[in-house]
Length: 495
Image (cartoon, rainbow, N blue to C red; front, side, top):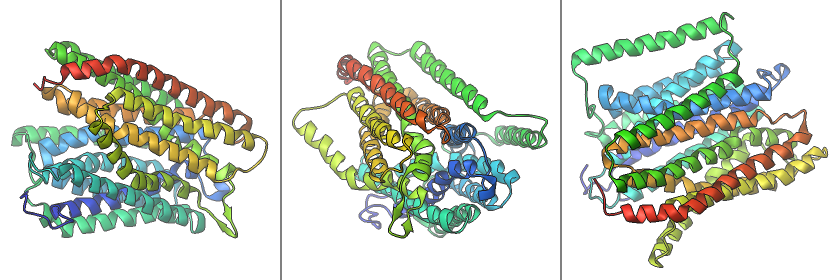
């Protein structure tokens, strides 16, 4: 794109296309995500599924973990088969179909809808983010600012999703709330199609395409995989295959962790790395550990904290009952408000020649996030006495989680791009994304211990999560002294 294109707040017009597409996609994703555990644990009389908390939380963890994991093949499909534009388009259509299926008042279609949304998000999410970068030339100084605007769209979409779907859930019905998510994705698709000319030349073709013969074989393999999923789903509904979601989540968590270690070790030992590159890899490894632990706690927002908001929080303001899902919007609102302050913080620290290492920043973020569970430890003690607690306990927790996220999440992404050996940069980003999947699945397993019928056990759950994350944060923080030396020694090498 031309540096002269300033049609969207001084940025290329294509940014508006991607901004609003992502905003509506995030509206649909986060709006539905806020409902999942609540819907699965609601009784059959309340038109829910009547699942146990352990099963619902495990399914939630598997779903959110799969969304991140499927971004890896989603990026590969765009690079080798379809190109970014078409992959985003088809991904959005699949997401919309998934929400429509979820809107059908039938328990049998629920998991099919989840599968559709997960696969569609895997196609759309990584590629639309990559296309934002492709709007700018390599020397265009507007790139970072463009991503900041794009990130604002993500959070605006999540706020809209929480409020719209949360309101429908409380006042109209579950399936109308799922249907609202489908409408949001449809609006995003219409907007995307009508403004497609703004991103002409961006992601129109695969960057590393297969030959026609190879492409045909790959499509046949993809069709076979889809048929396999359909067959397993059919056998499960027929009762021939019985799947315990908790056990499945445990196996998947182990599998993703093993894949992470094997892939990381292969690059480290078989990648012909220099000594400086190996030092970078060690520094990055601790960032990955902090990331997995962070998301295992942070993602309690959609599971145990969501249930706490429903069952143990006083949500009455006068005669108005705050919809449960609205509490989760606090994270997005805090991000919008606090992001400029954190951007200024890192700049001012660097001006004063204070440059904390990546590991130290991630360790601080992990500890701050974990302190939010100390707040929940105190709140849950009141709940264990049969009291409903004031909303500010959850709001304080989400505030601390957001501060931790702003310390860790953007810093971790920057660490991957800067510390990875350049010839393995794409693969290392894929390996890093596995930490999101691992953290999400572990989060679901941890939330499974949140039993509304055993409220006296809640304080111990939150205390254990807090102490574990604080312990990991302290260890990573202590190692940051050594890792900072590795980062500084490795700076000259950019091979």
